[in-house]
Length: 212
Image (cartoon, rainbow, N blue to C red; front, side, top):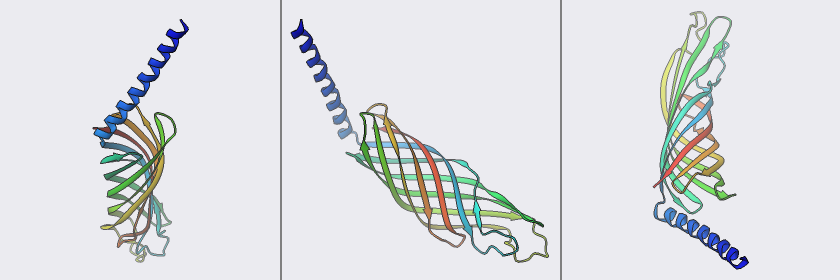
């Protein structure tokens, strides 16, 4: 009876190893993936040409929901991808004694990202991500400024293209060899441009990954 129990345990162990090897073989044969995600995002920026009569140059955006889609390839603990993300949000209204300024900001990015994962458990891993790419930054401002305050920023509807980069960290949970989920934080930096300076984006990201 003891020998039978030992044989059964050995059989289970072999089955587990076989399942792991099968998963690794599938990953090696099917390293490509698609990723789609949503994020809670907000940004800060210093608007150029903002006058001194009560107009604050630094503006924060409201918290908003943004989306991203990416395609990439896994190579062991590394993965690389090309990502498109779109972000749109209202700027916080700025109230002064004689006028109000309000507006919105739109940011579209195309990024080349690289990930490095550190496995913790069979299904969990920590990851770090860095990326570089292109950003299209668009800003719209409206105001009810009276004529006697000429130096305050006039209505603006402008856009600019700029270099962008991001860094972040998070965790990955693998439901199976084909499906996984990422949850993490990403910082987005956009180079100074004709519209705004000191542009900083913050994203709390949740993504679903499908491997094929």
